[in-house]
Image (cartoon, one colour):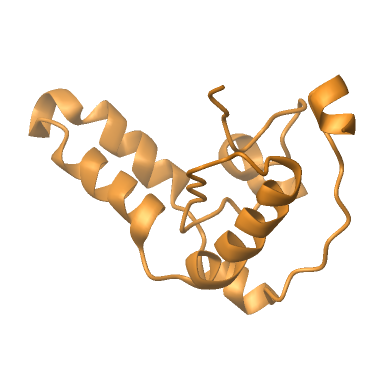
Amino acid sequence: EFFEKYGFVLLNSKSAMTAEDWLASERDVKGELNGINNRPIDGGAAYRKRMNEFRNEDTPVKKIYAEEAKDMLKSILPRARTIMPPAKGIRRMISGGLLNGPAKQVHNDYGLVF
């Protein structure tokens, strides 16, 4: 109800993910940017490989967090037919610099099409 009215909601939920699980599922942002920049050179092969890994690699995020995220999203979007959380995440930290530093604005990790 709140989500329908305001377009966002904060959920309180615990995850079964451990710090080690997050490290094992870390996304190589610099490598992805290199893949994007090299598309004219390799026809996008490196970029497609990295994006496939981001979406489908067998990681703790894919096995644990993705299922938790699906359950949370279904709780506020019961009509959702397909929810596709990624298999990797970005480990953000104060010392992470431009690529791995904290997000500086409100953002959403799951785009929606209605």
